[in-house]
Amino acid sequence: MTKSSTTKILFAGLTGLAAGVAIGLLFAPESGSKARKRLKKRLKEVGENFREEFSDEIDKIKTVLHPGEEKESKSSFRNKRAKSKTP
Image (cartoon, rainbow, N blue to C red; front, side, top):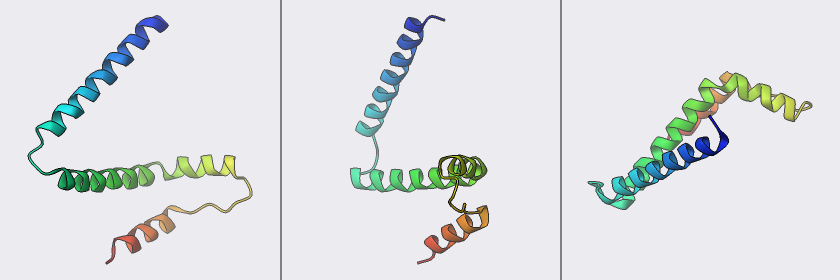
């Protein structure tokens, strides 16, 4: 595949994604503020799941970028997460 065709495919995909998001927002059955709250909550969950899933890899990257600093273990991340969920 040439660079030109790859760029065209990527552009078409991003254009389709943008159109889908726009149509979804126009026809959403709830108000904008509710949709934003739901989206924010879901993105936060996805981020937390990503951090849990890839915590070892994240720690390796941190070690390479900041070799002198102490790294957090999985258990300390989970403890922070549990504390943040309590009211």
